[in-house]
Length: 287
Image (cartoon, rainbow, N blue to C red; front, top):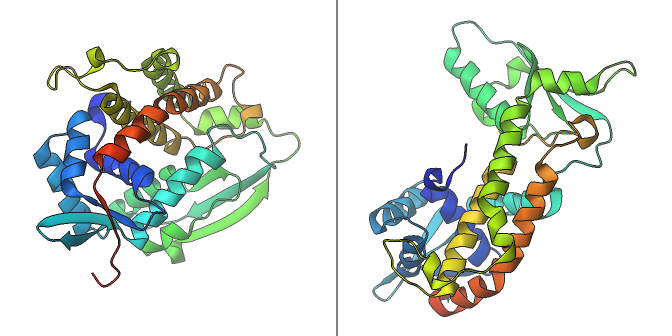
């Protein structure tokens, strides 16, 4: 279950960059990042280590300006952030417009390939697939499986598009294939954590004990960072099953309403804080 304590610094970093850097052709000063992350509960050393790891993984680029180091996006990280933005703001958490198409993926691997089997199953789960049978996985809609190519298993994988027979109980199949209770619990926990913010704005008393009383603008900035990161983690684990075949009390719609309401409420103060606090410079292509 995603909790405030379990958010990884890299996940927070990607959310921060998606909000403040993506599409602007700018780099952000490392000191600004450290200040923001301190308010979000991430220490300076963890923030610096995250920046370095992301550079080493090709997710960030460095740009020196005098004695200051700035960080910007690479093509790889920009693509990841655009995908996350589409998932949050366009695709959404509720699949109301499913056309009846399923993607079926069958695979057959040698018994000795345990690591490859684990890697493939992990990729499939992340892409929204569930195990229909041991070597046959299924996902709603037309799923792009090109990311599987990096596993080097193309010769062992077959992909089809299909529609269920008219007599097929799709609701029962979904319950047997995906862990609906676990997924619903993630949405319900998200609502419990964030619904109180639907009707209020931060005050200095909402600051963390370590930082003492702080400007509500700073608190809003940190809260919105955590809100968006948690929401993306929840919906990325959701295969977007067709809502008409889910239980009547499926909590995704309420959770999405909570996310959008709280995000809208925090945004004005968070934006004012970003404008005042962040040191940004234009990207220099020569670096």
